[in-house]
Image (cartoon, rainbow, N blue to C red; front, side, top):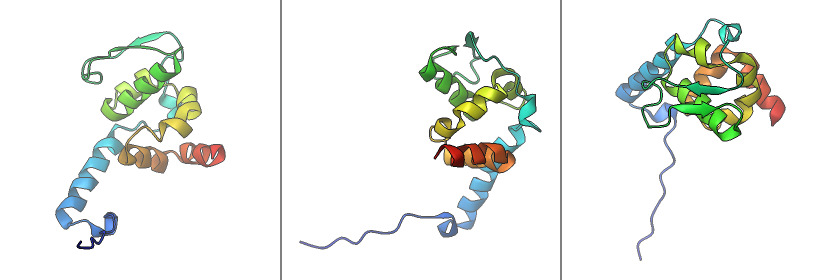
Length: 130
């Protein structure tokens, strides 16, 4: 029986120039959407929120903020699909900070790093919760 050797998982240093450029463009897409400050996030903190189709294209458009799973689903959708003007409208600063330690595990690595790089209070909240 032949032995199989496992290759180490690729890290950022193992990326080709083309892949590194793609990753940089992907990060920039999310970075450009960010608000200047978390203080700009004045979205609802309770009630039912209806998302437009450009953010809720997978089907679910109505989210009850009183239901924890729906609240997380809303924030995940907005962080991934929301445009610059959507973020202040649908995200609430206090809720984002409260949810971040768990929410950061539900969003992609790029979204997480872009938000934590821009807003150190999110990264510090995650460390404090650990």
